[in-house]
Length: 219
Image 1 (cartoon, rainbow, N blue to C red):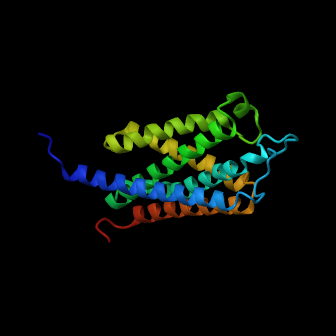
Image 2 (tube, helix red, strand yellow):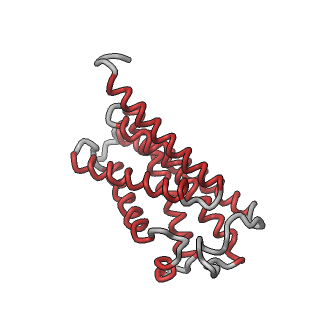
Image 3 (tube, rainbow, N blue to C red):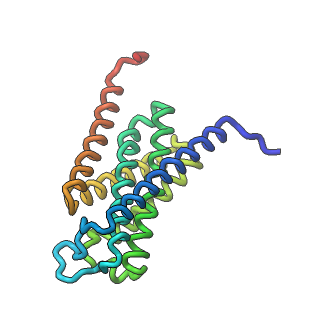
């Protein structure tokens, strides 16, 4: 007979939070895309391109693609900020895992909408459009992120190899989100989200450094 442990109960609660957070984000994203489908928010032309790679009838799908990556960025920000604190705080570790997993859930929808819906699962289009700056790296990152989330739910985080690969995928996440939003964002709101994301991550590092300098036993 299987015994339901306290750890299993906590994992179940955290999983419910992931579904609630990710689900609410996706509902908000799809509602926003439907509301703005008549607005020409994003160009049908890729950056620097002379020929549209998105049909006018795909405008709502284009909005879904952009809005899902924004939502994923917003969920990833607290995860990246809390990662340095996760090894010292059980609460920080739980919130990190919830946000990191929910962000992946939303990112998976973004990835599907971009590759399958917008580009018809035609990887020649994906690899050759200037709309996607680093499609191969993005794909590697998505797979690595899936592996790290799987490890977060199944493996204790103390192993050195787990910590090293986790630091690597978080660093890559920061670079890709920062470059995609703050540096290459098509709209001012996208760039603002990118810089806000960066500020949250920096604040997390400052909080971690401050905690390291506190005397042992200090609250």
